Amino acid sequence: MIINKVSIFVALLLANGIVTYGQDISIRIGTFYSSYGMSELKNVQKEIADYNSSSLNVPISKIKSFPSYFSFELQTGTTIFKNVNVGILFNYSSTGARSGYIDYSGEYKTDYWIEAETYGIFLEINLNKSEYADLLIGNKFLLINSSLEIIDLLTVWDESIWEDNHFQSQSFGFSPYVAYQLKLKFLTTRLELNYLVDNKADLHHQNNNKSYLLFRNRSKVGSDWSGFRIGLTFGLAFNN
Image 1 (spheres, rainbow, N blue to C red):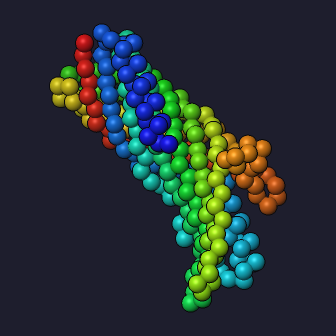
Image 2 (tube, helix red, strand yellow):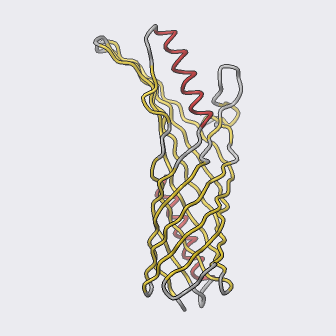
Image 3 (cartoon, rainbow, N blue to C red):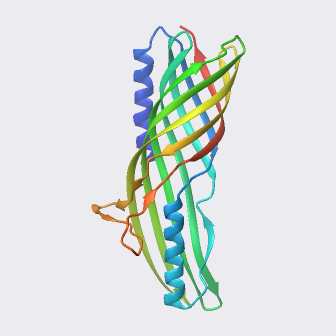
């Protein structure tokens, strides 16, 4: 699925290059260390762990809960005015959680895995353009497609039962950033700090968009990728 999404992005990248033929064009790829809000998923993880602890009469605990992790980004852009750049981007992010209990007779665990495939456009202004370095500020406008998998596994002696559920959501967000970029001929290296604001969206079942992931009080659970990101990107810049 990710390969198909990247193929679409590459096609858009080529289209962007055709449309902007004759102007400055850049292509960048990089990785960010990203924090994620996920407050509602953290709360539902605790609620499920507490409920199952009571049902199974064992002390189920949170082992990890949606920690910061690396995300990956691909961008292509062009200069439309002297100090103004625009472009398109694709970002892949993921994180997860686990609750569980294990003893001599068996094991119980609940695994959560959530990933986001994000498409967007960016607009940036070069505040200090020079031959070897740039200082830029900008904003990214994003469409965030999230997929969540929850796996429950109970093993007693040699017998196991498990349940696998898949949920999806689609949200919009924006990400203001500041970046410092070094240039050596056509090679670029950029250090970027940004903050992603995700408007959040309710997670619905993969095969039924009217069936939602719910808290015990019947309120809906949403994904939330909001958080700080810091990263390095490496790229090529072509001056036509």
